[in-house]
Image (cartoon, rainbow over all chains, first blue to last red; front, side):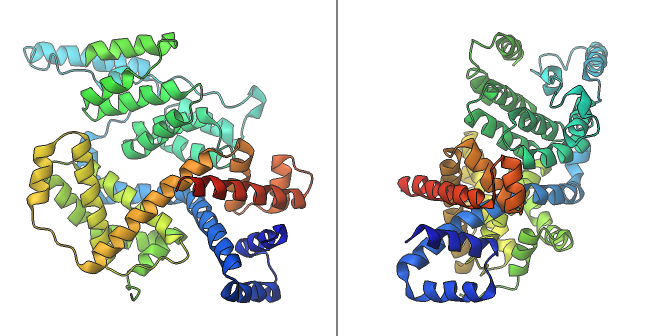
Length: 244
Length: 186
């Protein structure tokens, strides 16, 4: 196989080959086993890439269908968070204390609550002068707690900036907030696997997702993966561990 | 084996056709939900299982030679059921696993064979992902840009490459490397 053969195969798979050359290439694949194997090998990679490119738009299509056809429990368990989490958490905590007093303490000792620990750091993808850009809109939606909007914008942003781990983390958090837990977990795992500076955050959010799903043992195991060198996360992990 | 009429749902996944996909949800989601609820899961668990099953079938749907040869509802149910058993195992809920497995469930041979094909596709996908992750950031970005339908000239501009010939050459080198990494996992 010559280098030119592979370039022809690429042009063929991209649909860039003129009709005459396309027919000639297909005819060659019928008679030349080595060429046919090379074509099949490249086709496999090409199919994989096409599927990967189509996944985010498909997820966006499925989301409203999920909400429509799996709605019964979602309505009961959805935990939409207000944009300004800190005061919201304060109010929720006060309400919880009041409820515990009224109920004679029967709700005490129920373990860590996802809401209590899900304090997300603001996202900064842009410079001040970037107002109106996709990155800026994604950032504003996320920082404003408009997670449904942020999901769409961050997915679009990541199509072009697939190596931006901060945006990927923000997308995972937004999905977790909107109760798309499986998708969020998939992204956090990807962040951990990338072994970037954000990997400890991947484990932190995997632990929070486990807390959200009531799996304390898993949460503890994930918290143990946070390196002591990250003092900020270690402190949060210790607080969460103590509450579990 | 002959293509099943439900193959159209696979095309709908590939083409992101929301109207046909809604038909699929209407047809299949109640059975999955009912089964998951009966087996210690929640509606949210059913939703996640169903969605991930569709996403994985979407990958199969992109394979040139993939043909659906059984009813899609049977295949989706088998995928969701087995994934749920695996999740229960992961959570060490063995007693629940035994209960699920004790229940009589014998899929048709066509469904068994479609499921096995799906399993193989999943393994292949994991290996392709693993090999791709070992490529340079430039390679990964270039391949993903082109897969999204960005033209070679636009890709050249975005990647800071002098011309489309460079794009073709780089793409070819990246694919060759990816293939090499993928084959070395065997």
